[in-house]
Image (cartoon, rainbow, N blue to C red; front, side, top):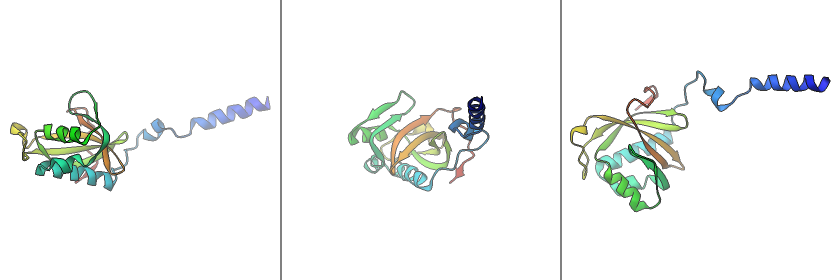
Length: 155
């Protein structure tokens, strides 16, 4: 009987413990780290200047990317340069916020050397970044209406 009582106390006390889901309830995600924001800003600045090699250098290998389509893994620097070159616009970082382990960055779209932003110039776009070791390991375009409302760090 004593063992059953002790087991019941342990089970009940475990219910108040923390879990990743429970910790999120009602609390905002922490702000992105300054180092993460620095990588994102530097990538956007490189892209806006048309320096595709520098922009590609901000990515780890391999890296997972998705620009409105399915995720794909890029394993060579040439693939990463091609990915950046395929982005028609440059980008100016507006704000960042953390959401479920990624940093969502909102950008103002700009013209860039070698690109053809066209009517997209002046519009906005959002991208989810995962950064490890000072390099982008995941770059995912966030579709309009799927990103949480901006409430994070305004840059």
